[in-house]
Image (cartoon, rainbow, N blue to C red; front, side, top):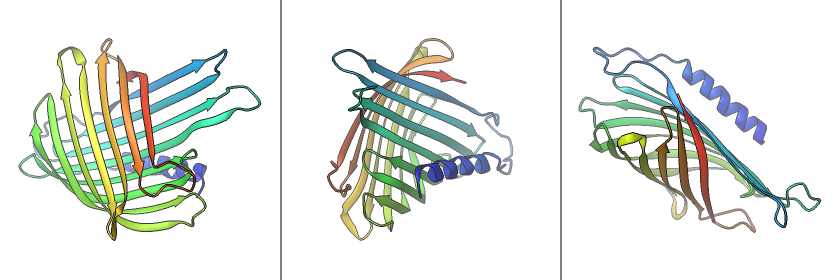
Length: 252
């Protein structure tokens, strides 16, 4: 499975799922309207140092009275010695996800199903697909503040480095908190921990912290720090990748 096949699979899945209609619940609370955002970040230096880093993401979101669907894609591409004969690629990744939640009767307990697809040339991840359900709970659920946790099994299919394709089961433990301030600013953090079920020392972990400030009704500035850890990386690769991304965001 190469990058083009992975991207095509994610896009096809997004298109298929976005056409699914869920059974209407009585007295819907929220209108069935799609909303989301698109973000773009660019860093460029020329002179003694020639570097280029481009990052982008897009997410769309729809809510029913008890159903919630999120679709998203993000990626980074960067090079050192940009435009020179000794140009070196420093970032080349693409990630997509589909996340569906179904609230139960008390509006705090929910079931979830999620699909993630990843390609990362610098980390030598040819592809990684993670699929699984989970059970979640909102410990805090108000207009401006959310705090939730999820747990469930996931199936992982991946090819990393020169090793053959690998299939295994993991647990997925996830926690997320978000708070919105007046004037459109917000902060959030999320941690995902996926240990292999037969060896807890073999795991993936991703931690994210972000802040966003509104410029106007449609534009905002966003800064996100992401720490990705793979306890079993490809040969000659480091287990830890840290990203700091600044971008301008358009909301609709």
